[in-house]
Structure formats: C-alpha cells, structure tokens
Image (cartoon, rainbow, N blue to C red; front, side, top):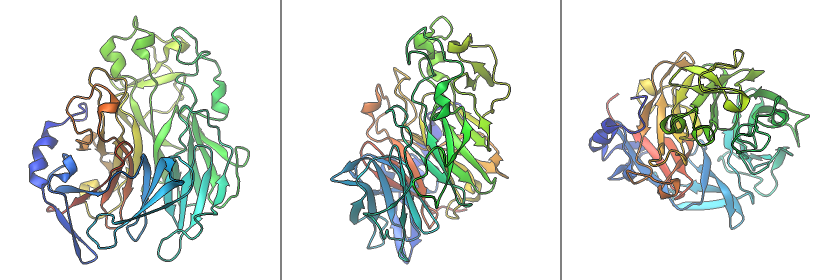
Length: 426
C-alpha cells in the first residue's frame, strides 16, 4: 500500500465507520453521517469542527479543547482564529481572533502560544483557562528571518528543553545561477545556505533573536513545512519538499513519468550539524539512492552525497508534506501510539492527475519507523480526478492532537477544520 496514493481498501471501509461516537466531558461526540466525505479506517469517524475560517495553515489545540488556527493571510485584522465549543458537541460555536499578520507556524507549550509570520516568531502567555492574556502585545522572540516570497513559511517545533526550531526555506528550486531556468548550472557552493535552506534553533525565552543569536541546527533542506519533535526518540523529524522540474528541464535524462514521481518527498531524523544534501543531491525512492542533481553534473543515476543524511521514510514526489505530528494520545488503537501522521497538501505538477490531498500514517517503534507508510484519511479533494490543484475542494495543511487524543486536520482552501475520532474496538 505504501507505493500507491489512492487506496481502494480505505474507500471500501468508509461504510464501517459512518457514525462513530465518543465521550468528552460527559457529552457524546458524534461523527458526521458521511464522515465529512473522508475515507477512514474501520472504527474511525470524522466531524466538521468549523468551516470557512480562512486559509487555515497550522493548528494547535489547548488543554481545554480550543483550536487555534494560523491563517496564511489575516482576515479583518485577525491572523489567528480561536475556535471554541461551548456546548460540548465537538463543533465550534464561538469564533474569536487576534494577531494582525499572516503565516503558518503555531504551537502550544508550557502555557505559551507560539505563532509565526513569514519573518518573525511571537510568544503569547496563556492563563489558567488556556486563553491568551496578551493578544495585542506578544513577545517578539525571533525577528529578521529572510523572506523572499519563495518557500517563506516559518514552521516551528519545540523540544521541551527550552529550544524552538524554525524552518527557513530556500528561496530557490535548486540553487541555479538563474532560478528555474533550463540549462542554468547550480552554484557551488550554494550561497543560499548561509541564511536559508535549513533549520535554525533559538531559545523559547529569548527576545528579538535573529541569525546571530541562534544557530543553524541542520542544513541541506530545500523547504520544510512539516516538522515535529519526537519525544520517544528525543529528536527532531522533518518532512522535506523535493525539488521540481527534473523532466521539464532534462527530458533527455528523465522520462515524463519518472520526472513526475521524483524526487522523493523525504522524512529525515535530524541531529545538530546534520546535512540532508540539498541542492547537490536528491533522494530516489525507486533506486533507494541519493542521486546527484543534473545542475551539478548528475545523469539520473550517479550517486552522491556520501556524507548526507539518508531519509528514514521516502514518499512519492510532489505531493507536498505540509504537517508532521507524532501521535501520543490514547484514543486511537495501540498501533498508532508514537507513530507519525503526515498531512499532504497535494501536488501541482503531477499532470494529468494530481495526487496527494490526504493524511498518511507511518508506524514507529522505539523512535524509528517500523513499517510501510499507508493512507490514513483520504477524500479531502472531493473529486476523483484532479487536473489542477485548484480543482481540489479541500487541501490538508495542519495537524494537531486534542486533549482527548482526537486528531485535528486543517484545510487552507475551504477553511475547514476536521476532527477525527475513534470509537471502535481496540
């Protein structure tokens, strides 16, 4: 199942989980009759928490069950939307907001809410009810990060030891002298890597930190939108968006079908000083090798990057992993405990049939993948054949775990927030 993007098995089992209920604070949380159109494994159900909230990027859920949504663009001066369920039915019936900036990253840790724009990271204090106390005057803990419009979302993760990790995406496809230009050679060394193309680490209690105050934790990463700290492994894991245009720029080296499926979208386990090899190499999940990019003299077969990281999981190319979440809850069956959920935003360059638009699951054991990846939640796009990404009615973008162990998924097209629950036999 790991090498296919659509699963008839999951589509068939939707009939087994049409009406799932679970309890929360004495209330019964019932899935929508059609699971909001999602195909899920047996015993799971889904409900719509809210819709039309805006371009919902990453999300966070506090210990009271309030959902904080980071919008890509602020709406009416509000870039963070707070969704509250006041009657306990699992659906938001109150919506407020604050923060007059767009962006992607949002995270709750130790009674603070952290949120990012495309160049800064802010910190808000939470009170005993897990509500923000300083919505108009957050601490600016990181500032001055590079934003050149391409791969500029600043996703964040925290490790529990007072550190915050920030993705600074490369403002380039593959560090060519002329970006996205056929035949233009790659720059050697790549000057972009001094301030982008990696993960930077800062302190959570710092004020107005910038490049000189933090450190480049890992490099050689074209763009990471999804990242999470794995508590069991004690390590940061990230999902890289692979490069584009292999077939378009080098049809003599890459057949059309091959170029569509390469390079892999890759999950890496990082440690301080790690180098994943961008822009010099990419990973090929068919050959199971690191391959030299043609801009640096590669021919589609030449291996390279001997010292670069190998991915721990490799997915098909161009399906856009936008969120990573390690599941630590108790609602789902035991096989999901400590495993990784990945939200795939969907492709734009796998014509004629775009792929992705789903949430995948990777089983983990002892902090490492223990089996093949599988489709967990599908059907977000709402149509079977997607010629262009704009055809998709919903595109998964963010993931969060609720205090009861349910899984929340955001959608940055329709602004829908989904909640996936389990009430089957464990």
